[in-house]
Length: 324
Ligand code: PBG
Ligand code: ZN
Image (cartoon, rainbow, N blue to C red; front, side, top):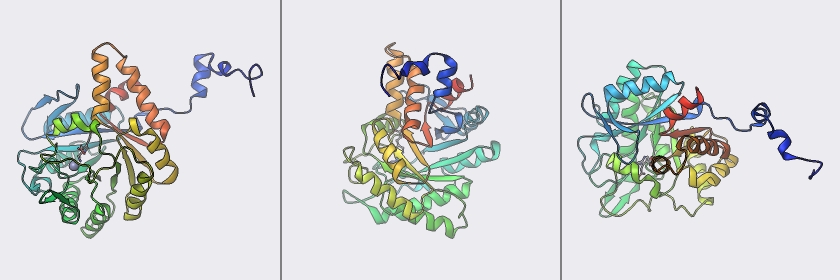
């Protein structure tokens, strides 16, 4: 059908028609809110590179989780900022580590929200890598046991789901095996399966003080130029027992979200990362864009590309818009 028989504008003529024609609709159920937990009491320190985001002591984590729950956001993702770092990242899997205590308290005070934990070593290691180095190389196999230990310690604290973000090969299988062995066969794994080596993580790394102290992450995170490799990474994690496959970052990788959606039948999560958040906040502050509208457009595009869920620092702000 072509003009003048077909007129595309006919179906855009009124608010009600536009509502009827809408193909993609965001809901608060799409969001997962990432949070940064820090030791101490009554601490709410603004993260400079991520306006509107904070380092929160556990009492404030609980408050924010309640706010998210009341806005109908189904899940949060907890990151930890530890007091101490060492070569083996021991505070990542300590029984009384910051994430473990935050999870325990949140599950205690706000049982009706899903608590996911980020499983990685980079915030906890003095070298800032996601795995354990042997000389200057990241030793894949030597890192697996510590990652699995971290995941189990989160489950023991009460986490509802674990999300390994390290990009070591074989870690999903190792985590699945250890969880099962400890009786956590019902705890799902959201795998950061397709994680690119991205400069968009910059604001997060200053927030979490997790930038590598030598080298970079190119030997374990993916080359932004690659898309076929995304399917191999995702397939590998499906085979190893992942329950949700994540693509990260989101905005520069909408094509990847779309192809992973077509190739993989598991739920797909997309991580709208710190740099994507910071750019919108900065341009909005300058008066160059309408930050609220760009936020909603961005989140809609991620869902339209095929994401079933979106990890986003905008979760609370966007939920407020959706809830009117
Ligand atoms: C650590 C981790 C990173 C992010 C989530 N987990 C940073 C990195 O890999 O360097 C990035 C999150 C963001 O930028 O919002 N493994
Ligand atoms: Zn890491």
